[in-house]
Length: 248
Image 1: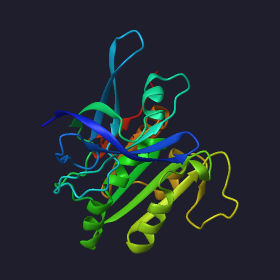
Image 2: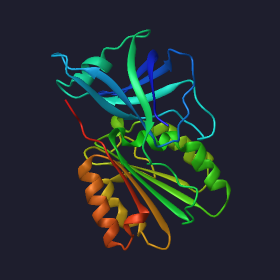
Image 3: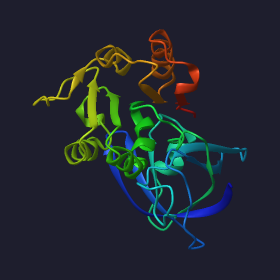
């Protein structure tokens, strides 16, 4: 059930030139119970006093069973954006109002398909970071495979890329493809791919009897990948979507 609370910033760092990772704790000292894949809403006001809010997936790595005390999000800077003014300049100790968690973009316990296709662009990768403990549990069953296709323009914009690389090394059955659309790495890695996420799908040959797909990020990618997956025969029930729209 969604709750309203005040968050205090305790740490932050730049993930990429225009993306900031923020770490909060609840001022009331209570932990946050959430399912990986859910999001929070940050509430604030425009300069004219009009109330507004923005949604951010919880990036905290969690198993879905244990409440967490560190509440992490990733915020993309939008030129002239009201949320950017607030969250881009927030200093440790300062607070924001929030509510949540919301959403159903989560791994479903009833799914039995052997392969998960996780597609993301930009900060749309944050829910998959939160899901890593659950993905580890899935892979431990021995009959599952998870492939993460993550699209960015260049290496600097692959958020949490080193974490996903390390997870892939430690967890057989998990594959991470960094899909770089503008500039390849100076030293390419074996699982790198060139081009857009939806274009790399052909390499994976999706099948309705094998795959569950999750799409998160830029609406253009989500729509294109959704259309491609339907052409491969996946029914809509096997394609979960969450679009990230930049708002001023």
